[in-house]
Amino acid sequence: MYDGSMRSMWFDSLFTEECKEFGLFPDKPSVFTGVSYPPTGARGDLSRVRPASFDTQWRGNDNEKDGFLAIHPIACKTPLSVAKAMLWAMAREMNVRHGAEQFGLHKEPDATITCSPDTEARLQAILTRIGDPPPGWGEPFPIRKANRGRMVAYTCECSSHGGKGRGRLTVYTSTTRLEATCTDCQKPFLKV
Image (cartoon, rainbow, N blue to C red; front, side):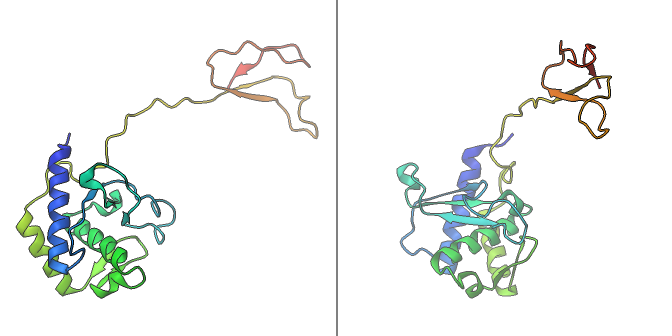
């Protein structure tokens, strides 16, 4: 189990320190940061997945009014990978086309981010200043596990269905008890 407030404070500290260190967002916007699937670029081929995304259409509380910085769970392997993803998203927001390249960041085809030695040293210094993340920092918000229904197959014993020698008629249903008979052979459907 994680403490959401401690996690939010750690992400806010990382955001603030990166803004100061790299000169991004000089007016210190009120941004909500967290582990979540980004609004765009969250699924699909890894070459198209965004490790983080900055969304300015977020309309949360007053302290979150300027945007939402979503860090994809795929980027939450280490605190350094989160710092790279956060910087990558902020740099892209400031200069959409070549923002990340200005800081020596490059997104690889497997959705990881590599950076120049200078940028990595600066990010390591930030992580040293803010300390270790709290337990559970890289987990997305908990989702209740739902029981998934399974379809059950029932077949007829006669082979007159389907034409062209296809064989038995199969019926799929979510119920575990089916009381139906075949109209051709008048026998009940049997559970497979």
